[in-house]
Length: 346
Ligand code: MG
Image 1: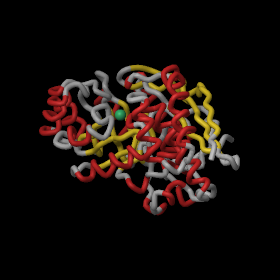
Image 2 (image 1 turned 135 degrees about the vertical axis):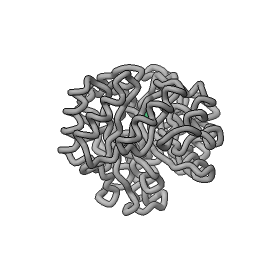
Image 3 (image 1 turned 30 degrees about the vertical axis):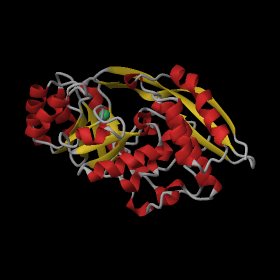
């Protein structure tokens, strides 16, 4: 079999400027990969590189020719383990670039088998869950407005970005604008360990489910300090990048927040999910600001998760890719009527 491959970069405007503790972005810079077989069946995947993890669209497009050469050389898209292993050997870092290829291959393979990707994995679409919708940092009045809009759109689970000197005021405001919502908060490494324990103590009265990444990933002892004293469950995101991180975080958090763009592929993500469970952790799958070219694939793993934070496409002004429907945040796998990931250019 011969495989035809290609890629293109795209800049996708966000609905609102998206601010977290370490900066603001107004566009999602992504790279879309396309892999076609002899019959013209096409798989699509996306890279949403994060500068925080050392990747940009330039680094992605620099290594994609080498990664796609591996795909073409192996030739059989069903050899997914072999291709992903050889990609890791070819380009050790660059997980978002490898991930785009992994997703495109899984989309192609499931489409060739005429199965939605969740059925290829053997998963039950009824065991899906609801994605959280993220409220980025802004002035408090704007955060209130965004929350009210999200509630009107039917989102029942909100994730609130923190890491400011107004954190308690923000959570108080959002809780009053969304009294019935499930609320998660994410400090994106902004607090010191002592500050984190005090903030979490104060935040606990607002009925939050967990606090994500309270302290810098470079301070694993700080994370343990917070975990041992925290009034709320702790999720690790920046501290949890790839498979070897799971045992390292297991005694200092409750929830592992995995992302395809951190770990470099769908098969590595599934290995991480099982490793996290073996270490007694709950599992969340998160995302970057990204299009359905990559988010749609993550949605198919929803039945394996405790928490889904897969709102990347929902944060775009207009996603050129169709994907798994998410009415009011519910990841509707049973509603899919196409094989593969369902990431189709609209
Ligand atoms: Mg996070």
